[in-house]
Length: 488
Ligand SMILES: Cc1cc2nc3c(=O)[nH]c(=O)nc-3n(C[C@H](O)[C@H](O)[C@H](O)COP(=O)(O)OP(=O)(O)OC[C@H]3O[C@@H](n4cnc5c(N)ncnc54)[C@H](O)[C@@H]3O)c2cc1C
Image 1 (cartoon, rainbow, N blue to C red):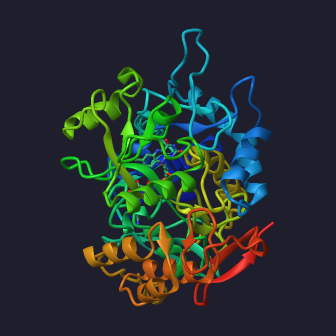
Image 2 (cartoon, rainbow, N blue to C red):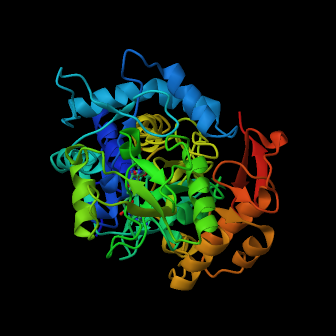
């Protein structure tokens, strides 16, 4: 299938980042083709619970949001990116509301703001209690469907980026379709489903990272996988189901095997996840208890109903929880306008790495990132526009052949979880360098390059944070070994 008119912009991935980027581009009159491999529930965005972080209250400010983001990120946040996020997130919330997303309000009609770990104040805008992702995705997809400038290619997987003269000129899909455009935005989501135990949908395996790397773009911060401390452990088919941090913001507590608290539940995520792991090791049990018994179930209807379906009763019993791979802080290395280091290629959302999250993402900064940097990506992609590329010749198509990633096996996922989990060391990471999956090898090489412990990256053989590495990011260029770089 080839479209009647080639688009001015190709967007790969229809989660929050992809759909919002496409919609923003149409405001400038651009024709967009949006390609998505899965239906809506296959996007992590659909499952987002807590909400999006933005300084919306009179007691808050972008400066305070920035300060909390810097503190959570453990000295590795790229300040300029975090500044952009903190300053532009309130506009993104207002724009989503104008697009018809109905955020929860208090009885005075003001935005109801949730509290999550690492935030000094209530700052998390939500919808439908903890159904924020679902509500946003439904509204954005309705807008996309009624937008005549957007052509949607559903159930189509991109398997290669096309390159000509050091520039990305389009994509090729699994069924052999070729689509060219002056600019391509990758918004294919994260990679947490590479790990055996995860909160993410099965498709979150970083396919866009490999596409970009294969085409010549650099990746960064791949060693930084954030583990969420409260994913259901066991639970009748619900293993890995996330219980949003917002329940801890409302007073839920984490309890050890004697029923005692062992951590500040609202500390940043890396700290809480590590404390949970320590407690599990000390008790020899596979989980700790999340006590939600005092929480009003009406505040989190979808969480409570999912737990009940899994045979757990949050009103009367402790919920068994343990850390699970949740959020890829690394991704395709981009500038503040989402440009990768290959002309014509942009990345936005969880697949991108602006450096904003450093070594530990502040809760609910990721949805805000999708919108703030989605708007920037749309603007920059159209502003940088080169002339429409001519269709690739047969010889070019042969040169741009897709690199078929080997199927992701249970063994690879299990090894990654065991050898590059919350704790890792040189010996285990070195074993992963021989894994058949290319992204797992890149993750291992990145984790080996960072010889210190910082945020989500805990090396038992280098247990201390090395202050000389503040502000440094591990960059994995195409065709060269991973190395540390200082980003301003
Ligand atoms: C359970 C859960 C709860 C969360 N809660 C929150 C929260 O409260 N607040 C917050 O800020 N963040 C939260 N997050 C993280 C946040 O949801 C994600 O970081 C964000 O939604 C990612 O959006 P995205 O658009 O980048 O990617 P996704 O929403 O994952 O979308 C990726 C899209 O790319 C498509 N795709 C992938 N590969 C290809 C390919 N090769 N070709 C074509 N299409 C492809 C997929 O089909 C999908 O449509 C949560 C995540 C999970 C899993």
